Each structure stands twice: as C-alpha cells, then as structure tokens.
Length: 101
Figure (tube, rainbow, N blue to C red):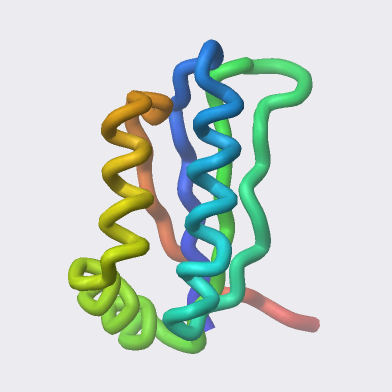
C-alpha cells in the first residue's frame, strides 16, 4: 500500500475554485482503483496551503493510474480547470507507506 501526499500552494482568493477542483478529482482517483481520503483546505494558520491524501494498493497501481489518467477526458478537464482558474500556484508530491501496530 502507498499513500500519496499532495501539498498545494494555492491562491487564497481562489479557494472556491480549488475546492471545486478537489471535488473533481476524488471520484477520478477512485475510478482508477485508488481510495481518496479527501482534500484539506486552509482553516487556521497559513491561508495558502491545502493538502490531499489518497492511497493505491501499490506504487505500480499508482503508476498505472497516472498513465491511464493522461488519456481520460474527465482527468484532462480537471487539469484544464485548474490551469484556467490558476487556483494552484505549485504543488509537491510525496509517497508514504503505513506502519501498523
């Protein structure tokens, strides 16, 4: 199992646009076999940082999702929405594996 952690720097004046973007991606990740754990928007503290977490059974399954999403019209529309609204200024992606007791 691998969890993808996305840290976004967003335009705080476009929070509604970023929230819409997140709502577009949740079902898309699940369509390709992932489990989305949600988008986390600013509340207290920094007003320009947002997070997303989603899990795939393996890094190979994540790579399959990445490759298949490039040809998916709904994924292309979500990317275009972010580009058109410019709600995302930058992002970084990291991967984690869980440790259970």
